[in-house]
Image 1 (tube, helix red, strand yellow):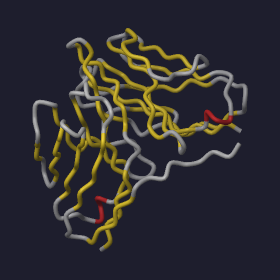
Image 2 (cartoon, one colour; image 1 turned 120 degrees about the vertical axis):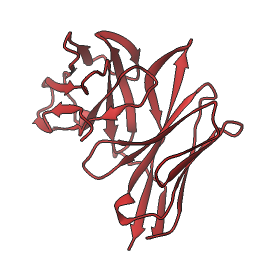
Image 3 (cartoon, rainbow over the protein chains, first blue to last red; image 1 turned 90 degrees about the horizontal axis):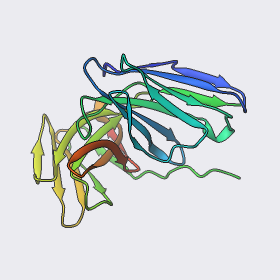
Image 4 (tube, rainbow over the protein chains, first blue to last red; image 1 turned 30 degrees about the vertical axis):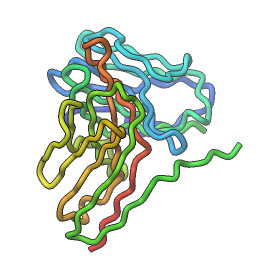
Length: 112
Length: 116
């Protein structure tokens, strides 16, 4: 158990809908990262927050947004969902940036 | 259109053998490298890391070698066990202006299968 908690584990939704994925980092970790893992793209970095502020951005679609709250948990919002958004979404946390990042178990999103 | 899945390199070894998994990284400015293991249905699990001021780092049954000249990273697993069967990813990180940002760029992964 990495100490990073993601909910829900599975999510099935229809195209055009909006979903929110939640992540609780390890106790004491200030950085939260979101990654997307799909069969054809592998593990892709989406976005990083550090102590509530956006710190780095990857190839995150405009339909996707994230935030980190004062208690350091984070949410990833995916809207206007398309079939191609079906993937595993992982959250990871670390104390700082550029240090060992621990991954959660992921949320499997299926868009039908 | 039809999506094409990644064709991951595979490595098959017998239990007890040593395994070597290779990774070529792309960013010469990367200064931190990590190996992750991902088992089916689970998130990536940290194995070992190395900073760019080192050439070699050893852990329990694992050794990471870094060759910055050719931008190559390898993971050696000693006495490989069936429980080591998984997908192994290398990841690189570039610290920006001295402030390390945690954006990891992952390699495509290698499937390791250990036969009893």
